Length: 55
Ligand SMILES: [Zn+2]
Image (cartoon, rainbow, N blue to C red; front, side, top):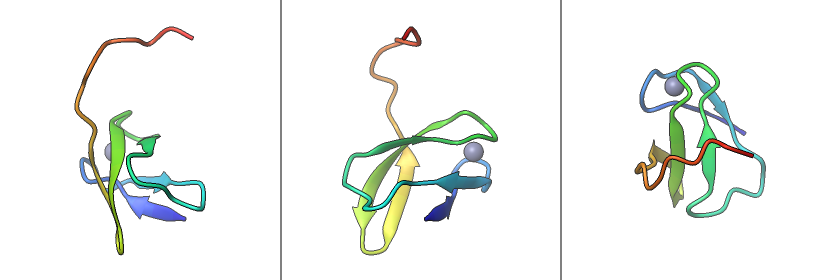
């Protein structure tokens, strides 16, 4: 499914089934988004816990 990014309103794709606390990344603004609700599916900016951009 595709949702609107809460930051830039760009399309964010989520794999289904969507699960709580799943992290998605906006392709437009690179924000990390967390699933905070499922009915309806709601995205919020994920808190920046640590900077770990390595593979
Ligand atoms: Zn965005």
